[in-house]
Length: 318
Image (tube, rainbow, N blue to C red):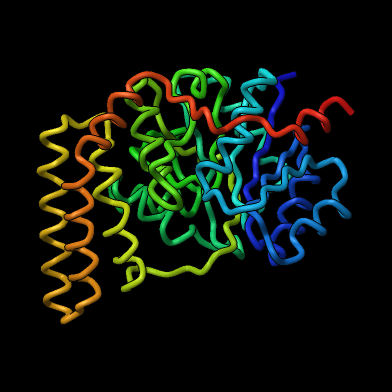
């Protein structure tokens, strides 16, 4: 039977982690679980250590961000020759059959490097707002409604250019070819970059409507905070998108930054204008660094800082 490692990164997740791990315990597909804690200061670590002794808990003393924390466990998965990994958010809950269905679909479609289940909202009544947008960016509204209702003649798997990493099912073959998350990203944007690299290295990214999770987060649309986040991350992941020639990437980034600046002017927001100018300076200053990052990720990127902690090896030996 293929071995599946579920990887969860936690940071002050006491609100969700017990429910997340309880749902995993109810999975009909056997899995192993590792949690990388990013220096939580609440009761997250105690909840895991006392309530879930079978979960491997790797305690970090600082917040490495989403990508680098995942890299610690991904490096461990590659060392252990794990067949598949499931990256799962601390605020996401699987259904009993979710992981088994993901495995079945993945084994029939080895050309896919990332497979996401449907990501529903916290109650499971509708699709997560942002997740719905990711599908709508690739398909007409009529198809999106069919997916949301899980009715009609739906394919068991359909490709998308991007899906967020709240629940990614990844085969080892994809990890070995694509590598780990890139360290230029701290939090947000690393999943965009990884999807582009997966596709550059010959794999597809897709969604299966046969499986689902619930993503228990605030359901919001566009707002000022989201715009500020876009200004900080969108230029970088466009510039590191290996599917685009570097000249085209810079032209797109210039166009995006002009658009952000215009929004700041229209909204009479000095904060947006200031952030945009700051991002322009960062892009200009880091041109060589961006070029180096593009070059290194054309071959599998291995983050040498993502060593397996001694605690992981000790727990494995026990």
